[in-house]
Length: 284
Image (cartoon, rainbow, N blue to C red; front, side):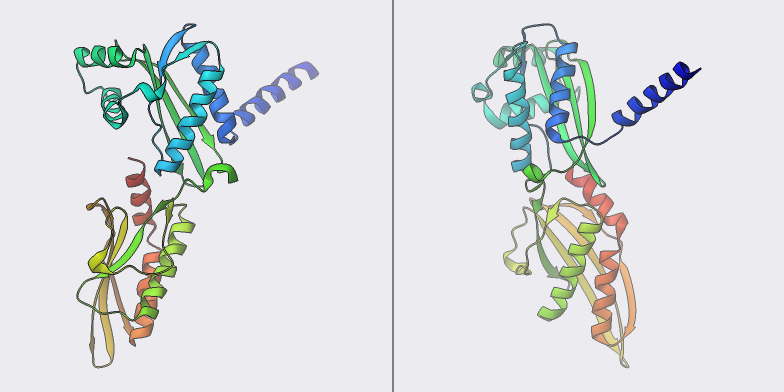
């Protein structure tokens, strides 16, 4: 009877352990070990850049994975320097979506000199990060491994996990610097509470000279009538000049302009639906 109880406890403990978060280093070690179980010895494998929230995090994760693959003598790793940069990376990413012909897959194989491609994404999954990896046999386009792990953010790499973004104001209304600062601070709180991998500047950028590579645009329209301030605000996130997500319109009615701006800022801070949409846009 005691042996049976011990066996059940061992199984439950193993299940609990598998559900725990691990460091990125532990996750990559496990990934390489699983890759070795799935691929024949001396497989020629290529590893384009891992997708991540920022280029710095993508490069860091990819280099850490490559280091482990090279260190494991069971693989022949194609030197990434021999790849033709972003063109090959994007072509492989396109292939991994199942959108290319067999002829294209074969041509990629010849270019890389590899028989398998390992690709993956490290993305923010709420309070943790998630590493998704899959391996594809290039010539057949067959997925031979699908693997994932929940990863905690460690000091060694979490500084790379943020994407810089600016903040500008548009919408036919001139706001005082103090009002802009109020909205900026509440937007930062919203990003933090919703675990969004974005970093805002301390000051607001000029709307006319904004760098749209990553920028929030706040549009505030209001009017004062008989001492009553009425208005609405929307928030848009743009990346490389393309609108990625837009909030709903926040309608606010308050006595006094200062309280109106505070309410607008609080509405933006508490817009969890927008921040969820933003996180989804960042990991696409």
